[in-house]
Amino acid sequence: MNPAASFPPPERIVIATRESRLALWQAEHVRSLLQRLYPQCRVELLGMTTRGDQILDRPLSKVGGKGLFVKELETALLDGSADLAVHSMKDVPMQMEPEFSLVAIGPREVPLDALVSSKYARLEDIPPGGVVGTSSLRREAQLHARYPYLAVTPLRGNLDTRLRKLDEGQFDAIILAAAGLKRLGLGERIRAVLPAEDSLPAAGQGALGIEALTSRADVAAWLAPLNDPQTAACVRAERAVSRALAGSCEVPLGAYAEMQGNQVYLRGFVASPDGTRMARAELIAVADDPEALGLRLADELRRQGATEILAALGG
Image (tube, rainbow, N blue to C red; front, side):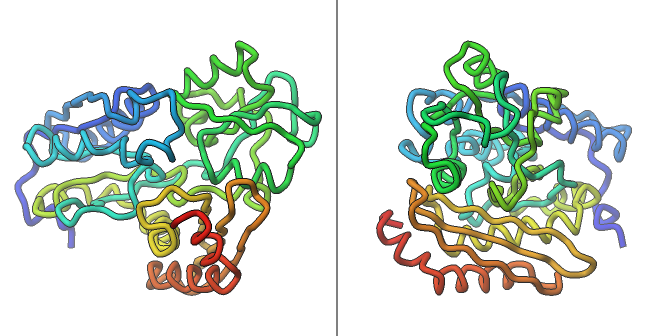
């Protein structure tokens, strides 16, 4: 049964979105899908600037984490000025307030990290002391672990700003999510897509999430056709790992799930920021309870030393 059949078709839907080029692409993408589903519906965008967009001089881990990218959008949901918000799933806090729900998780773009450089085709080619930019503690820890001779420095700003800083020569290379580059038609900037074995992605990386008020059963029903069950299962497993271990804290943690037939293959790690200590684990199980699989992997990571690493981080 189609859940949307329980409600009249929407006449107007307002999407709250950040105003970066990538965020607007994502919101426009969802708008086009909704207009295809509901041709008579007016779908409008409400562009907003978030605290995460404004604070560019400090690493995210120092100023409150990725939740800074969603709070203003959630306020728009609460005051009724928007019906839904579109996010990169890796920017959605692992702990969500009960009044908000993820009503759909769309099909995933390439979930892996990408090397972007005008000088080097591989990380292995960068000489000792070469400067690699990243905004992510997760990437930083993995870079330190594999390439301890490289200088890893913070890189903030939207995608265009980060590419400009690279082109100005501030960095020898930068690491970005491949999905964002591909979505904006910048795939040619990718020198190498880093395999998960070298750079395990963040929970939810490459997937789009649609958030609405938990009380809006009508919005959940209208958006249900946009949910991709396989992507949703993988992302929910990944988020369960992160939620169990890090909660709302910013720690070097990766979690990545792939569908293999009717099973979910889930990998995860927790590390110290300098990459000198790392706990890794992997599991595979049927996809009927992805959150339970995520919790099992979190337990296995604890057995591999994650508890001690998190304690040293204050997590």
